[in-house]
Length: 611
Picture 1 (cartoon, one colour):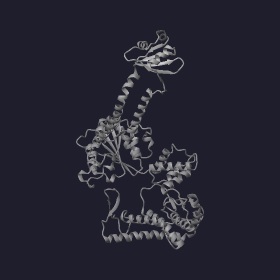
Picture 2 (cartoon, one colour; picture 1 turned 45 degrees about the vertical axis):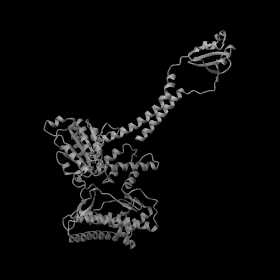
Picture 3 (cartoon, rainbow, N blue to C red; picture 1 turned 90 degrees about the vertical axis):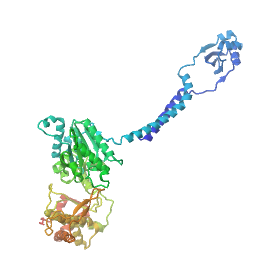
Picture 4 (cartoon, helix red, strand yellow; picture 1 turned 180 degrees about the horizontal axis):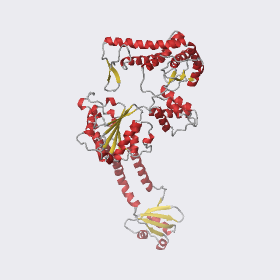
């Protein structure tokens, strides 16, 4: 709640209290008759008065056959004496019920104090609100140097190592750390030293933060967590002060674990900024280095940090004694993906016929976060179609949505554009199914998705971590299959293959300059990548070769592209009938799944040709 909101809320409460106090003393006023003392004496003598209530000098008169009336007696003189002076008959006065009412109690004092104190109370309340706001601002000024550290306190969605699929080696490393903190004697007796720092690194979505949360769930020691970006402010020295406060708090709770997420926000290589030694981020990093392994080495605080950019971290941060362990989190393989899908499908209502193994086969390169998003998109798609459960096709459609974007059926193609797109995708599919080292075709479609007019979905048969030159050449031929198909069928080319050509050109240049797969250029890498300080991205490449070598590289890239083009042209020319059959089927049905595509190809008795 902001300060302004609190002030408004306080003012409303104050006004309501004032209204309540006034309501206690408010009585509906009716017009009353006021008698003079001689009129009152006349009424008593005539027997019309039933009761007189005396409250101080005020008289409340109750008539026998009429409403109440009021009057006042003489001050410092009794009522009986006053009435006697006005000629009231004593016998008539005896018939009147006289009641003396003491003027005391809450109403009496409130009627005296409230008119004088109420304005002072209102002014005091507003002054209190103003001073409280000022104190809040002052307290914030003095807490800039405090770390916004959070203590893990058994969240509702607490997870353990059993809830993290895959990452077997990474979990084994962290299980040792948790066991060390629980049973330090077992390790200390043989001279083992507790690790000071553990660095988790891997590509985005591989589960670094999830793994840290599982450590928090497993450990019985205090677990503090903070983001690297929370250290640095615009004020000089704040980051270093927060680091000191973080480790001071952690040491008081030792043994404990401190988790710093996205440590690259403050752990970048020093000397690359514009601020030199006075750069705020570098001062923060210096303080982290001192706290982790400075003069004071007696500590039982373990620091776990996560980043997806270990290449930009300062070398002093990565040396032994600071981050002693570096745990790599790879993208999950097919078995891990199946296990991850099972975990994320626990809260989803899935059809009993769903085969998660097939989903894992169709998702190579997906991270754990991608798979969680995939099942969520499938559930949304099923709900949109008013289904009570998620079916297999919902998940397959979600895979394509995650990879390529949502379907754009509203994008209506003309008859000519639809034909060009059909032959373009048919060219990709035909070349892919005709080359030994190409990945098999799983789906061909001319329905627009994202920014593509159509697509050919190819997936590998098995998980591979190395790729050969022949596989790269097969990829190049498949990429150029759509371009060659358009030229052969229509004698012209369209802009539909521009992205294919860009990918093929980049891949061919990498074969020459990065992978050393050119016979003519040889096993040498060319070009040095530089990073822009502010963005931290690889956006510039320094030429570390001569202009003559640059010309040779360009010639070799062209030669590789032309070789792949000739292979694609040979396949499409020799199997023109198959190309036309695929394109005709696409124009008719718009989408061909793997089974239907394989049936169509087998009808022509095709045999893959070698590269």
